[in-house]
Amino acid sequence: MPEKKGTGTKKTGSKSSPTIIGKALPNIPWEEKPAGCKDVIWRYRSNPVIPRNLLSISNSIFNSAVIPYGPGYYGVFRVENRAGGSSLFFGKSADGLEWKLNEEPIRFTTSPYGNGRVAGGYDPRVTKIGNKYYITWCNGFHGPTIGLAWTSDFKKFHQLENVFIPHNRNGVLFPEKINGHYVMLSRPSDNRHTEFGDIFISQSRDLVYWGKHKFVMATKGGWQSLKIGPGPVPVKTKQGWLMFYHGVNLTCNGMVYRTGAALLDLEQPWKVLYRTAPFLLGPQENYECVGDVPNVVFPVSTLQDAPTGRIAIYYGASDTTTCLAFCQVDEILKFVKAHSQL
Ligand code: BMA
Image (tube, rainbow, N blue to C red; front, side, top):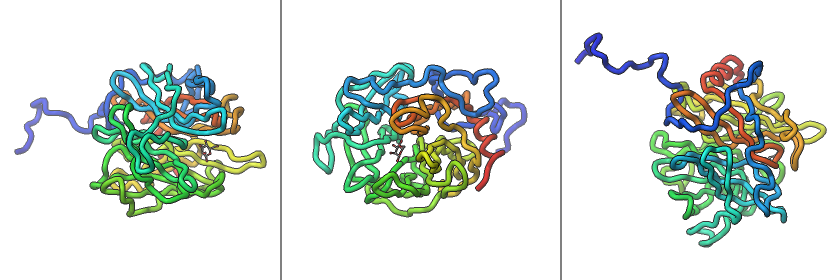
């Protein structure tokens, strides 16, 4: 039946309908862009959010994933202890800014590799799909590969089989099934400080058997010339999946890690619609340039508030601390499109 005019039916495509397809998060950690700032991503004034020595045993706390839970936030943190080991720790916060971390690493209640085992490894991401929170991370298993576990309460953690055979890093699960498949971005690597790396996508019906592997995007000139890898869980927008990623170049002083953004097709996320030629965030502040690994900005998770388009990005700084930055979705999308080079 044709809609009658002027009956007050719901407007579609109105200017005010939010760009982010997702939930409201009214208590998202947020700071307005400082006056005079010309960048599309700006830093939290009180960075770092988490100092390296928050725990008595910690050498550094960085590259960590945060997710809304109940009225506040939960997170899975990469903690390097003072013996040089790296494992995943659980933490919580009421506001996303002040964090309390457990003193002990996460242990898997059930695991195909041995129940009760410590969650060793690094660079966790957390993705909510349905009622479960999935953790993907770089798991040591005859070389780095992608580990996978789930929890519904952050008290009991259940490890599943590793996703890939070595060597692979940066496994990032999309926050919903696409065409009936779980979909994961990753970056095949080697056993060392890999000097290559492109982004690929893999699919699974059951989170056990992975296939339909496809190429997504490769390195490019300048700041992303050595390797690239997916960062936070992609943000669903009306214009595509917004994927922040890290890009690396090699200098006479070592590797420099910066952040870019790309827009992927909603239905076929291996299709890149736009991709920034300039980086959006790079090591400039002292805490990003000086630390255990200098000149590293490594984005790992985002929070977003759909109605306002606010995005908070958690990133690791110089492999030492956890920091926070902010952006507005419409401004990012405009920038990515205006400066795109595929
Ligand atoms: C990558 C990972 C990251 C780290 C980065 C810079 O290979 O190990 O955890 O932040 O190197 O050292």
